[in-house]
Length: 237
Image (cartoon, rainbow, N blue to C red):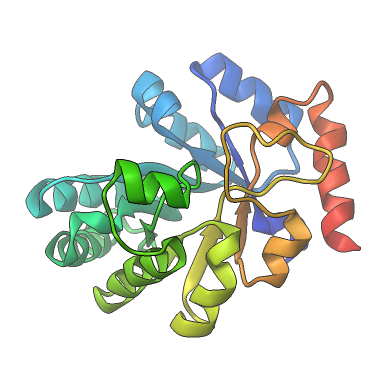
């Protein structure tokens, strides 16, 4: 896989027109993330547009509900031919297992390969202090993310979303086949924004990340094409 194929760029825009403008501006990007903002605005139409352009799709809806509801949503989402789909590990073992089974069913019915269902361990906007004081979870942050990843793996999910700061530990414990998708990746020349647990692209890959989610350093740059090319150079060297 080319290094740039390991970068997922978010379509974090509110309209179809803005999404298409980004797709036209960055035709070399092979893997795009559709999150809550665009999906709530445009629904499955944006997935159809991406499929027509032969792009890979990370549908980042972070599903978190009772098992039956999550399973139904995963079954439908898998029918659109998405490549990655997120659920919250904190939904619990039953919900994760039901979601995995339903995703395979939905993809098979639609004639697509099953999506990789990946579990959110802990949002990269949260810190150790947030975990302890706001969420009242008396576990150290690295241990908590590891436990969530192990829960996902034991429930039959093929991967997890984690901060690059936890990637090395998860890679060592969960093995080479477990898929790790890392947001919170920022080149040294980019602003941190609301990300708290960050690494550079090269550091994240070295730590064991399979895919890097890099959004605002590219899409909010005055010259997104140059920013994309700059990240490619940084990863290649």
